[in-house]
Length: 315
Image 1 (cartoon, rainbow, N blue to C red):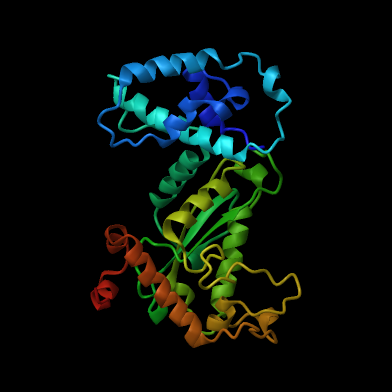
Image 2: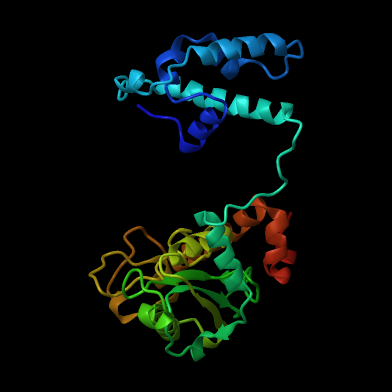
């Protein structure tokens, strides 16, 4: 059986309800009414609804043990109806309450909030040439930016849209200071620098980066936020030109799109693309990727992508 989500249970209790609705709500006309009542019905009788709701509340068992024996039974349809009723009641409460909800609200320790704060702090830092990265302590996140002339990357060249976002994990969990965390970020950046330097058609001088040491454990949250925001073309999560972050520590039988396009890595030689990737097909995928982003949110991406490239795009 699926129980109501935590937020939904909190709403139930805030109205004087309990999760023991499971024992009663299957036969309750009010549940069906809340789930199915047409909001456009202007003849809605608020006084009668209040009476029905009060009667309904009186019939809900207060003792959770009374419905515990129902746990595990096939109540999926009931739970779905309950979720709908909760949302409808929540909407109704917002409309009836003379005190309005806040325009904005932040949950300071929610993962999404932490990820956003770390990501924005990273973006406030100056760019550093990737070629000049030295060893330093700290685990956290980093972003790599492109400033070159490779045609496929024209949409992001010279922009604040990263070509790759990554994280450097601490050497041990629960470490506090950058020294204790080890060289997680710099170790990753050095590997990326080496891969770019030996690529057949990339110039290391065209790459810059930002990095930010974070409290251990938050680097993945921040990385996920930036990947979801920018859809970096080299990240595997984006699925367009993945393979840049691959390590040559295991035998591989599939040549990544990144290696098809840029080559140079010795351990990748001898591999073939069983899926038939070619330089032309990967370049085409990258072009489609940026066009798709532009169409998905033109206002956002028009501000972010390369102005000269945007002028070449037909509306």
